Amino acid sequence: MANNFLGYMMIEGTDSSLRGVALITDTRGIPKEFVRTDPLRPEALDRILYGESFSAYAKQSLILENLLDAVSNDPQIWICNDEEILEPLKTVSRIKSVMLEESPHVPLDAHGHIETSAEPNVYLIQAYVNGAPLRAEFPEGTRTDEVEQSAGILTEAGKSMNILEPFNRLQKSLSYLATGRA
Amino acid sequence: MGIRSYFARHIKKHIDVYRIDDFNLEPPDIHTLEHEVNVFRIEPSMTVNVTSWTSSIKMKCRAESRIFSEYRVNAKSYLVKRYVKQNVKAYSHEVKSKIKVHDAMKLIRDMPLELSDMLKYQSVKPKLLNNEMLLAWYGPIVEGAVIKLVWNKQRGTLLVWYNPQSRQYKAKGVYLIRRLGFGEKPEWRWV
Image (cartoon, rainbow over all chains, first blue to last red; front, side):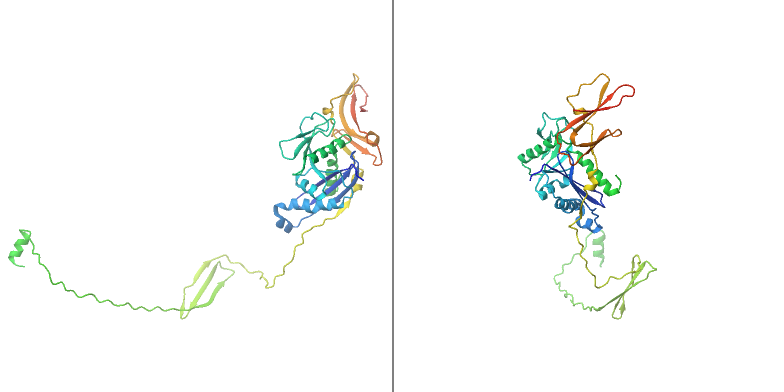
């Protein structure tokens, strides 16, 4: 049965430790599922072998794939705030994916309105009735109809929740897991 | 030289020139130079004397019946502390491909949603009495699902706890209104 869940993915950490969390919420922001990884502590040899690409490898191939494997509810769309995991989020999950950020832009003409941007694969979406539009970056190769569908999902969710708010909770939970302090 | 020839040279500046018709010199003797090269086989052993307390290495090179001069090479002297073993074991480095994932619902279940003030985006404002002023607007919030609201005065945010079992989905916004006057308390007004 199809649900109207939203999926949030966040992977953060330092050079010595990386950790990922995935949250599935309904369109009110109420959590339905939340999973976290153990911290990934790379050895010195891992860093030498992978060099500059270690962070991308760890985020994409280790943390993201294992988080997606562990999640039992498929959301309508995966939302992230990290460009490094945007592409693999779509490729691995085979679900619509978007990177969302606040935008300093003035509100667009109407609720649900989409505006193209000078940047490739980036759109402004008026997801809230009252509020600034969201800056939405889609993976390369996302078709226009997929962008419109994604904007539709976000606009519908924007009626009953602040779409970016779950990132606050993910950030807090990651800090708690890393330091043991709320 | 006769007198005539003497006067002719000094007074008349004449000198006698004779023609030699019979130019019959012997060619020079040409001989092949004989030389002998002594070739010595240098002994393959070369001794290098290194001492830990000097900063030079002595190199001696010997050939049959000859000893070449010593060459001194300036070098830092190191004490050999460890020898490389002949049989070196190779180990494989395992690159991780699995990382443990845990259910952490307990951690996030009780965490409230934290909403920021969005008053500046409200195009339609509520009617206010003379002693009232708008402080903030928070939303969208599903009023029917709310268990608890707490205003974080320091951060200017509203903390919202929802009932996860609620089936309410209709969202509203809530204004925080300040009433001017002694002892008046702020009011939450849903719209």
